[in-house]
Image 1 (cartoon, rainbow, N blue to C red):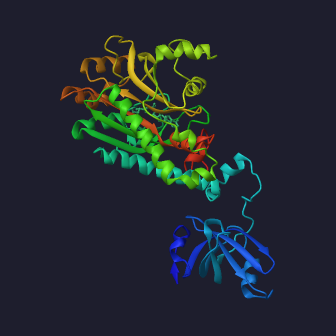
Image 2 (image 1 turned 90 degrees about the vertical axis):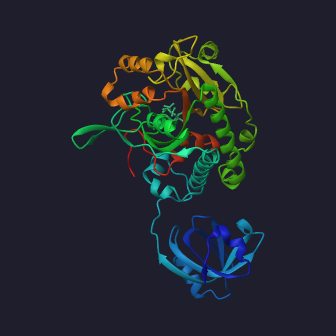
Image 3 (image 1 turned 120 degrees about the vertical axis):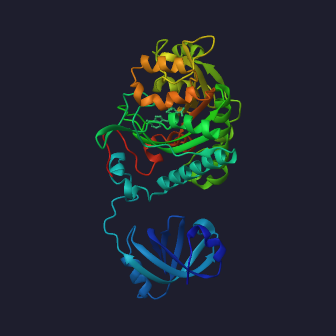
Length: 430
Ligand code: 4AD
């Protein structure tokens, strides 16, 4: 008998097939026994019908518990009453393993309990839906850049130097040298952009963030495009189109997942370009008027990110930050050199910053000066300085955090559910 996946079941109407999966739930009603079987691609109602109470399949039904693994064979029938419109009339069941006392039952559990059981929690419907959206968002990102002729460049995870400040670096030994887990592939991307014109890297990044918030992970995935000869405005246009592309894909291909998550698609459907733009100088008084305690010159914290994201149903782009609060590589504004040509995209509905980027310094002397001012070890950046010696040009790019984007798409409160195994402050189990 042919092994088929639940997601393909409609193509096997009135055929005999085999489904391999786990018991999601079971119930009985008179002469009928129902086993809901999940196989990772969907949940199928399978039915055993008999007037004989001692039917051997009823015995198997009685033995089965939640999450027991099994192989079910039977005939696919169309039935409007069944979830998904199809069910399987069972002819035969092989029990592979009986799961005893599965810890996650249909009752409510606390988040710490679920996080301890993350390896099992992944099987729950809501978690499954979020990770389906995550996979689709990643696919959309790849399709977007590949479709625009960007070259995928894998940047290293073990690095000798910092990209985003030294306070959040993860140190590790690299034989007899110190190394750091990558905070961002950007600096290497600047090198590959000079070789390929437009590139992107996509991988895990690491930040020893001491902040325990619903927006921070210690290990998160970031996509980072970098474009030679591009400016801040080009980076904003690219980020805008990327976000709209992802939204469209999620709305088209993840409808059922959004429904499972009770996500109102209208909140995504209404996103249109252009996104409102605001300079840091314009934003600060508005934020203060709305109750923020920040002073001019402070970085935008979580409360400010929330306030900004309440300003518009669209993401809001904040630009021209004080150079002092931004990374060493940011290009200063030509008329206001105290301001950096950076941009943060703040997602609506309080999801906060999902994209950070901007234009990079292309002048050798200025970059050397910044490396000194930021007390960075020049030896580690010699190769990076080379990029300003040999064919330097304006260039720009950004990083988009996958998990923050997925949180927003799914409308979920905490980022920890957007990655199969979140690394959180002091938490590395399972
Ligand atoms: O603004 P960030 O720090 O920018 C960079 O790393 C640049 N080097 C990127 C570039 O220009 N190529 O981070 C970019 C994005 C943020 O907007 C956010 O979405 C995500 O990365 N991010 C995090 N996501 C989850 N947990 C964290 N701790 C994050 N830190 C940043």
